Image (cartoon, rainbow, N blue to C red; front, side, top):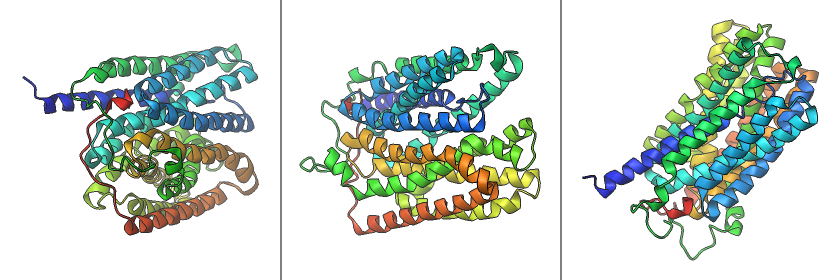
Length: 425
């Protein structure tokens, strides 16, 4: 007969598997923006910017709803909204209708991140959370890669062109997310009735008498603003590369469309290694000093961006290696700053709102990223854009270094062993 500890371990496995699958599905409905319709660069940039605005709003709203009581239902709501909007885009030939649907899709997508981090924060102990988040973050990295591959296959093999006004890739993407949502629902639907869950929400070590879990406490937390500042620059860099690498390879280096997509995929294909390494390194060698490791990664990214224009002219292998290393460093820093570090500096009751705020501010950088291409690149070129990436990485690294110094001057939160709470359900 299984013990309560064995039962709890099984439940945690179901939470992780369900959350991983659901967020991979989320990304399948995010990465295909503009992929099937082939819009002009300026139109594509506008679509990305509008998507990012409602995405940021969804982050904050999703965090609030998740903290109010049922992160699981909030995550499902965001997924179903994204399914609906993405599916309807298959017939969204009219530009205004397509833009409206992308706004709805952006909101639904934004809801997913804080609600799922809230869920994982409730179910995994602080001592194991960094490793868990490292593995979980591979969901959105590999989910984006899957979306790119699916879209490319459909465009080539369905024989349906943009001139027909029908884009089956959107139906396939929404179908993938719907299946992921159903799987998540089945994996987690009975967790609220588990006898392993205590009656009262567990504390993350913060004193119950303070206001660290209130909006006032969150906004007064310097660590939240440090993570937000660093993430603003990191996310601007990440989304510029995520959506525009093929365009860079084609327009600047003369690659064919197929070759450009193949090389650009190295950004995500190897990028998933970054969070795995970070998840283990931050606990084994850095004693949960997230910002210390973050500063090192970002300064390394700055050095790589300095070298990239030189490597870009040295052939296919050099540029592939450069893009792969960028993916490893950027994705490693991404989950470290926006997830691991945030969950450790607020009580569990504020996990949703804190992660929502940090990612919403990062999404402002995401909103600006399309204009880096349409304005900056058109006037100065791609080489100068990588010089700007150097600046972004250095600034973000300095912000992390300031955060690391602050962390050394303050007492750490009580590292009590956490049990999952009903608050997430």
